[in-house]
Amino acid sequence: MGKNDEFFYQDHIGEIIKRSEEEGAFDNLKGKGKPLNLDGDLTYNPDALVNKVMKNNNILPPWIQMDKEIEKLKEELSAYTSEYNIRKTVDEINKKIFNYNLSCPPTAQKRKVKLEDYLKEK
Image 1: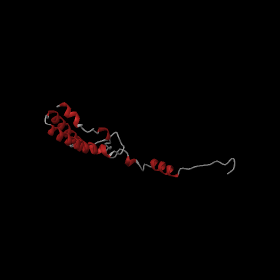
Image 2 (image 1 turned 30 degrees about the horizontal axis):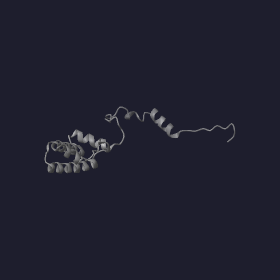
Image 3 (image 1 turned 120 degrees about the vertical axis):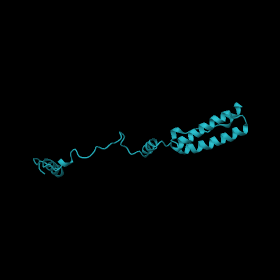
């Protein structure tokens, strides 16, 4: 190419689309159909979808159900006076906490209950 030669780029696809628009090829597409009802968050998030479906159907995730069971056992534990019952319940709570921690989000994990904390109180 010489110094005075100009480079010319022609967008063939753009020209075809422009010509088709002018000829009315896309007129039948305007205003047809229903608008999509999309959530504000368009990212792919399977956990959010599962949680939404479960919430809409009044179903608790298993880890939330386990949390309720753990809290109930802790309430019962505070009423026990027998060392046997305390030991047995602490062991049961810690087993549930172990399973709970495997299934819940990392930010919701719990610490195990210390037997010493309940034996000292009695």
